[in-house]
Length: 496
Image: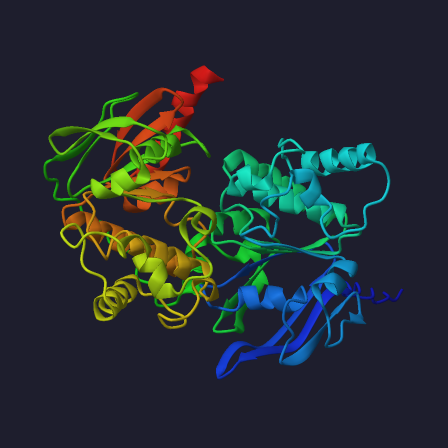
């Protein structure tokens, strides 16, 4: 009896095939010889530090820019050299950017059908819209202006818009969970798996490395515009991924604070205290009480009483907070922090041009450029020079510019940070944590509000956990991250 050879299973056909893709911006090579074959239904984590080429690759595939060399195809169909975003959409390519491409002054319903032929009755469109929003886990109402939504809700609306576009073949996700809490993230991951099971290919960019390992089948790492790693997700750990992203990374060694006098005590709601020289966390749910407290201290919620130093004061507005030395860095840098038409230098100096000389340094061409250069060196900012538009920098470098605005022209008494490392890569996070700790060491009182326990654990000396009106203090320990999560569950349990 002779045994017959069992034929090998055929390789799955490529949904997306990139061949020798290169992109040149003048003398800068943004992508070089990128070859990638991705089958239908696969979830690929696309990783790389800021400037590695992730956004450029997404822009090529979605028709925003043309490759300088190479070609790519969808289901074996060559896209040619003149691909436009509309062409890409017609081919079933949907891209969800970290900053959603939505019209702020239009309603959710109008945005969901923006740029598409409107057929049928309004009631039919509303039913389709509600179905798409329900599938992505969003409960926003259709008549709400998009500009009134937070970043997380805008991302979900953008994703629902992609579902309504038609036959989705390739979904490109750029930091989809950056502004989402754990429950919303889990829901989104379940949706991604469901789409992949239906044959949709997903390329997922995220700086949350555990998310990549949780939902992705495969990991591709870009460095300097080239693919340097391409393997099954199961072969990686978070530490291995961090090393692949930034081989020469040096993690910040946490050193205890030299605590000075009490600098802050809240006089409304739960009692929160913080001292000069320390970084204090405010940890809770996504969009939770910790962010409301930070906004109130920054003058965004009307009159808020507090002890600053030994003096009782009332913060009445953002301008009043700045005058008192209380500087707030908002969580949504694009909507609440940066002005896209400004240069990098102007973005750092924005609040200080009209300040009286006895309260702030006098901004001149030379003094402003000196401040900018010092900030750029301290934060390790890379990219174009000071005269370039802030929009031309990567997300992590834009975040560094926003932080530099409130740490370098003038030293604050109280620095309020809302999720300062949200949506930045491993290397940028190390830079930001280092500068925050150095700022505190100069005698500044720093409060960090976050819904991410690892963000609090990376930079804070201690933390308050906040759920509604329940507040508990957690000391730093070797199990700081786990203690924060455990206390959050404990405080949330009675409410449940």
